[in-house]
Length: 282
Image 1 (tube, helix red, strand yellow):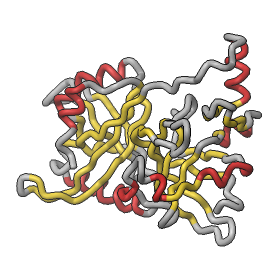
Image 2 (tube, rainbow, N blue to C red):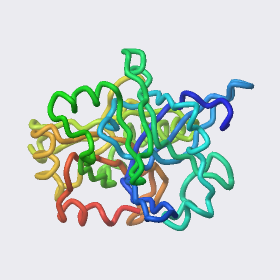
Image 3 (cartoon, rainbow, N blue to C red):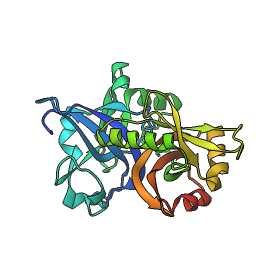
Image 4 (spheres, helix red, strand yellow):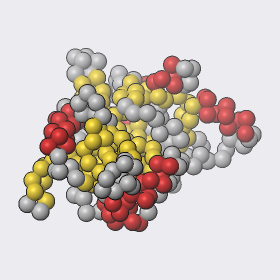
């Protein structure tokens, strides 16, 4: 892989974590969970695996999207599990290899590259890792001559929401079963939020919609306690991403069926109420 990887498709991104680099002085970059799809150049086989992307200003991209990696740095993207596990429990991830974790430190989105941008990343003498594009550098120069100021990534917060009411309708169950199969096959199943002001039970209702089949269809709802916060976030255009975290068969209160956890990523921090209302989903 280290010899010829150039483009990797980023299917999903998840929670933000801190990775402690075993160095002196200690460096603690922020990295985000990600699911990748990579096509083997030798036999054309598609591989889907988990890993991480370094948090940066342009990470909030429309996914799935192709990340172009600088070939000269490709060896830096594979980290031995023994080293990585000192910071993060990697047992929950589907690794590219049994003993290596895939991490993208520097990249550019393929569509940005085609528009003329180039990857421009390096480590400065102070040991701080910098990653940006030519376009971003030009914008920074227009605003200030001081290019030594560190770039502070935006604060984002991802929480797994329960998709309630999923067992109430046969169609919801059919869609979740279909979505589960597609996700296991490495396909992408988009999810989105939709307000339902005409809902006869609750005018504040917000539905989870997915496109597992040919059209967008409802699969359940946001838990009641979280509705005020989700409404505020939608109104302020602070929802950065909505995606499946997991779909599984469970028996809750003697009611077997397909259940879903859906990650909603906020530009900011979710309230304690949201975190508590979603904490019981496992």
